[in-house]
Image (cartoon, rainbow, N blue to C red; front, side):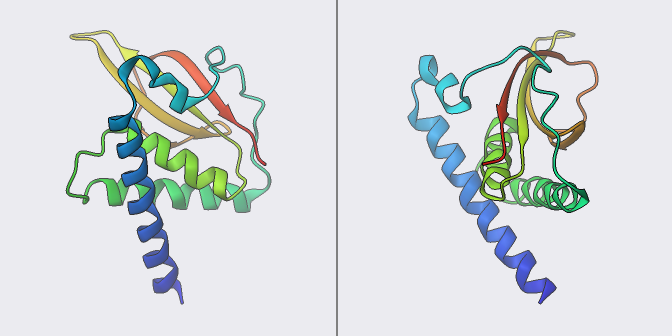
Length: 141
């Protein structure tokens, strides 16, 4: 039964990564921010805390699946599609999360996206040396 759940989660992750990649590719650059939602100040929605431990465990499981599957798909699944896929999967499970965008200024400017559930980075770690520019909260529905 556990193996079947892992296969289903992996298949869901492939679909979520494909949809996220297609949405990014099909959206003109000037409208990409619409995929993310309404931005808030960095860390402004830190009050989004997941419900009990079960949500944190589920979020960790989703994060591991996204990272593992993204490394194996035959298309480039960079940090932004990973973050969008994780956010969609967490939203489907009614787990509040926050997608963050930031930059690492040295030696060359490098952008990065990551997702947190409460204070825990679910997708996109490590985030050391990054300056957060915006966050996009996804409350539990």
